[in-house]
Length: 88
Image (tube, rainbow, N blue to C red; front, side):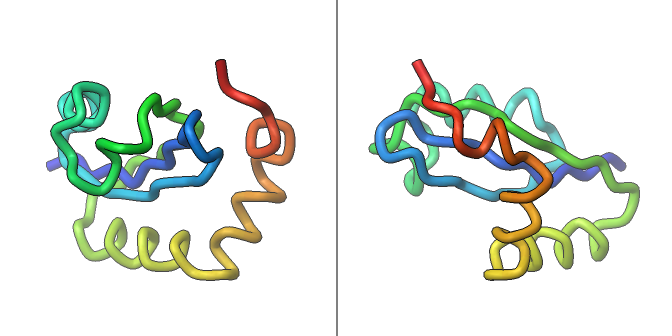
């Protein structure tokens, strides 16, 4: 099975949403149409990063890390230009 951790950036408040899924395309479509409670009021969202895993425990631990302060700091450094970019 495929597992993904992904990072979306909201055009409404420029904040990040970090999630995990087994079907990235479907999950992005759900976010886009407002079917995800935690992001429905923060649309429009832009995918700015994703990672692929083959183990569900690895993806879960990566998601937890990215949601932490150290994870946000890593994303900020890794995606320096994208993280600070204004969305349309």
